[in-house]
Length: 94
Image (tube, one colour):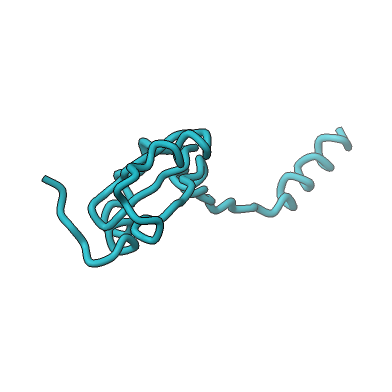
């Protein structure tokens, strides 16, 4: 059985990684877990059980970009080309 949290936001923070399977969908959740989800907002709203009061759940959207790996930047080292220029000048003289 799923753990119950004091607030819906605390449940969200504790289970954020598990929401990856809902990418691109609207979700409705309580302090006990997800109660409805769908890509279409109206279908998600219709899927919320009638016995849950309107202020008893939170609506949110899980965006595709939330679970994208961060971009990594690698250092680039530049070298001086002076030695190459000197060699080319000597080659051109010949």
